[in-house]
Structure formats: structure tokens, C-alpha cells
Image 1 (cartoon, helix red, strand yellow):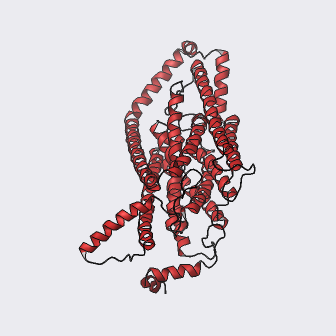
Image 2 (cartoon, rainbow, N blue to C red; image 1 turned 30 degrees about the vertical axis):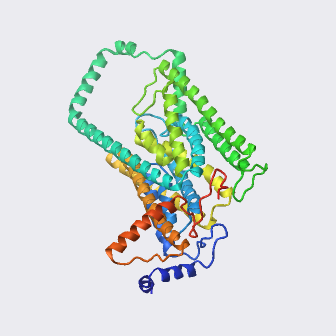
Image 3 (cartoon, one colour; image 1 turned 180 degrees about the vertical axis):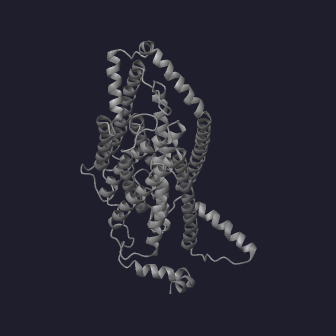
Length: 498
């Protein structure tokens, strides 16, 4: 019977889908999760595979999930994005929970770089706020093309970084094997010399002054914590601020409790307050890091590979780069992980540290977005609950697999490969979505003009129709309808365009 339906063509499959979707969700207009069908199974399997790939690099994988939910599960993009966010939230909880038990590969400290995190996150959120406004004004054709280009360049640079790290690790392994005997001999000689010169050795290894020793011990104690209280408090404060301001402005199924209307003075005042608060937090963190680095230098703190030496220049340059990453995240509707993960690698952060730090960022941003989506009534709960647990379990499998691979081979470069491959798959996924909407926009244009969209088999006629499809598709993609009826894209920040 299934083969007969497939052979009967699209019309029969459409009727079968309509029968299976007899019960529709009141929020999305999509069928309810029960009864499940083949598309549900295929979508969940594809989402699980994408999550496993992304989990190794500590990123959410939302860029891969949205196309899967649109093309396979059949959700409209407006509702696929909230479902993707709920899935990413489950994965982020798993990532952070598992990374909390891990330690830095080169020092006795948390795997998460909390200093880098509290410096990057404020301006990343501020950039996402700006990018969200630009997203409402820019044509979706331009946004889609720029997104694919960005993801392609990101994946290419990240993979190159991974290959460089892989080559460096190979050289280190070879050198270690060749020099093992020589190092052992040198250590034995040094130990013998130390037995004769204990007094001189004690004098040469005199520690720092007492006050500096106490400060250095306090720094090491704070770094040893998996979750430093005040730094977690800064992140939770930003989370509370963004959620509160979004709820105050209202939107969708949740009107503003203060009567704030989009475009009004109250709307822009609330938005400016949110932006200014995030910038102020960033400057306060900057001052703290510069002061803390000066203290580290005075105490004789030993930096390891991948550490930042924060000064007046780097604490301005890197947050500005993070602001651009946030603009990209808000403009293209993707999570910050797919942007900030490769960015951290580019800045020289060790791959395991970059993955763990990115996972914490994703937990904050996905929780913020999930709260907003749920409040605004954009989440189909039956799918969301199951996809949330899928995110938890698939990410756990991916994390365990990556941890086993690193322990077995001793190569952390595999994390960079995971991030690069995730960006590459995301780019390919959006190309598929682009092609699907390209085809639908062309068909809708023909339908609206009451023309028959039939392609004759003569080569000349096929070329003419193909050219017409390209031209109509580019015109239609400017609006990129979010549903099958070909709704036009709303104009302006508040969607009041014609």
C-alpha cells in the first residue's frame, strides 16, 4: 500500500497527509503529535543526528534543526524556530551538566572560561537586539544569501583551524615519543643534582610575598569552582533583565501588561534601557578583568596555552567582535553558538574550553528565548516536550562519544572539527530551505497570476520556463512567505507594512 501511494504521486501523498492530520493544533495549525507518521520518525532521527554532531563542539545545533523541522516535519518557519529553541535548551542543559564535571586540560580549574563568558555575553545579547531589528527591515532574500555565505566562511575557517590543531598535536606526539628517553635522563640528572643542592634550591624557589601568595591562592580557589557565584549572578541578572524587558513590551499572544505599543515612546524607551544596561554591564566587566589581570601579573600567576591576557585594548576589541557575532545571531535567527564557537577558536581558545564556554552561553540565550516563545504562545507543546527530551538524550550521546574519542586519541582538535562540520551542515540545510522556498515562491507567483505552471519537455521551452522560474523566484523570495498561502512579509519594525 505505501508503494502504491508513492507511485500515485504528490496528490495521493497530500491526501494521506491530510487524513493523518485530522486533528490540528490550535496554536500552529500543524497536526498534533499523536498519531505519529513517517515524517515524525524521519524528523526525530534527523534531529538526533544533528544534535550529536553539534554536541561534540558544545554548540546547540539550532541552525540544523530549523531546516529539519520545516522540510521534514512540515512546520512553518515561524513555529519551527521555537521548537528548535526548545530542543536546543534540552541539549544545553545536558552540555552544561556534563561539562561541570570536567577540568581544564592544562590547569586545575573549571573547563568553562568564566571571564571570557561574562565579557562576551553582554554585547552578544546587545548585538542580537540590534540584529533582530535589522532582520525585520531587510529583505529575506538578502538575509538568506548572507547567512549561507557567513556559515560557509565560518565552517571553512573552523575546519582549517581544526586541521592546524591536528597537525600540531601530531607533531607533539612524535616529539614526545622521540625524546622520552632523553627527558627521563635529564630528569634523573636534575634529581641527583637537587639532592646535593637542597639548600640552594630552597633559596632559589622562594615564593612570592605573603600578601601576593594569599591573593594568588584566592584566584586559584575561585577558578577551581565549577560555577563561580558572582559570575553566575551576572549572567542570571542579564537573563532576568532581557526576559523582563521583553515581557514588558509584550507581543503575540501576550499583550504588554503596561499597555506598551510597538513604535510608541515606551517601546523605544524600554528597548534603549535594555541595550544601555547590557553595554553598562560589559564596561563594568571590562574594568574588573583589567584590574584582575594586573593582580595576576603582580602575584606571578602562570598562564597556560589558550589563556587571555586582558588589558585595555583586548577588553575593547574582543567585545566589539562579539557584538558583531550577536548582530549575526539576531539578523539570521540562529543561536550564538554557531558564531561564537568558531570565534573563540579563532581567538586561540583551546577547543574543549571553547565548547564548554559556548554551551553555557547557549543555556542562557536558549532559556531567554524559550521563556519569550512560551509567553507569546508560539510553541506547540506536544512536540516541544518530546523534542526537549530528544535534545537531552541526543546531546548526552554526542558528548559521551566526543569525550571517549578525546580520551582515546588525546586529540582535542576533534572538537574544532565538530564545530566546523556543524556550521557546514547548517549552511547546507539553509541552502535546501532556500531552494524549497525558491520553488514555492515561483509556483505561488504563477498561481496568483492564474497561469498554468506546466513544463513541456522540449529543450527550448524548458529553458524559457526555467528562466521565468528564476526571475519570479527572486521576486517572490523578497517576501518569502511563511506559510503555504504565500503571505507577504510585513514591513517595518512593527510589521505594519502593506
